[in-house]
Amino acid sequence: MDRYEEMGRFLRSRRARLSPEELGVRPFGQRRRVPGLRREELGPLAGIGVDYYTRLEQGRVQNVSVDVLEAIADVLRLNPAEREYVRNLNRPSKLAPPVAPDSVRPALQHLLDSTPETPAYIIGPLTNVLAWNRIACTLFLDFGALSKADRNWAYLLFLHDGIQAMFDDLLKAQRENVAFLRLQTSRYPNADELSSLVDRMLADSPFFRELWEQYEVIDKSHNDYLLHHPVVGDVILNFQAGRLPNEPGQALITFTPEPDTPSAKALHVLAQAN
Picture 1 (cartoon, rainbow, N blue to C red):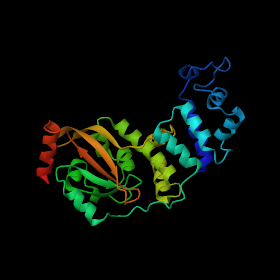
Picture 2: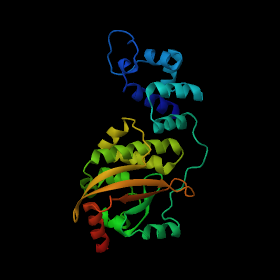
Picture 3: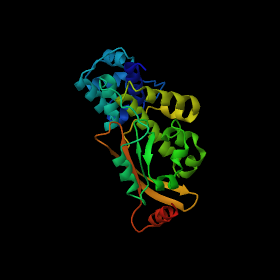
Picture 4: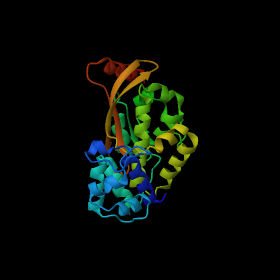
């Protein structure tokens, strides 16, 4: 991936979301063959020349200044994750990519096992599941029975029928996964495992490829999900992701219900079944 060409494609995709009317500017020209803000409209708003911005979108400008990037981000109304994505592409980290281990430190596994009624697992930078507790397997599936390549949420959400059937709003979960993986590719531009995962998903899932080409970017940290469980029925759980500061690229994921709700009772039943 040429990071400057990638940044240009991303900026074009964000420009296509906006209209002059949204930004309160007079449209440039009369006929608009494609939707979105024109370069001639964006340049003056960001305080840069149209020719310069055109070359930037074409991937022909390197090491853009922070002030220029921020001005463009303001005009395009980029969210914090999108701003980080552009900054990462413009000046990528020189840190070595984190190596995704097959297991986690024993203390972290003990932490997972200490919450028998809270589904929890640890993921790596590829959204690969590295460790889990028993109730996480009871809620979702036996992670240990999967191959290392398939023990990954991209694979599960796009290519595993059982997991797909569980999510009431599968599209939301899929979009979030793709958008988070795109952000990860900018954080770890030299991570071969991450590139291989994206290549695999682009080849194996036409819908993953369709979403990938939409250039959505998010940093996923929390959300609510309605899950259809084959044993206990519907459960509403809050997803929380907390990065592990001493474990590069790893995060602790938990799924918790509201207290004293049918979902809490359902998780209790699943815990007793272990």
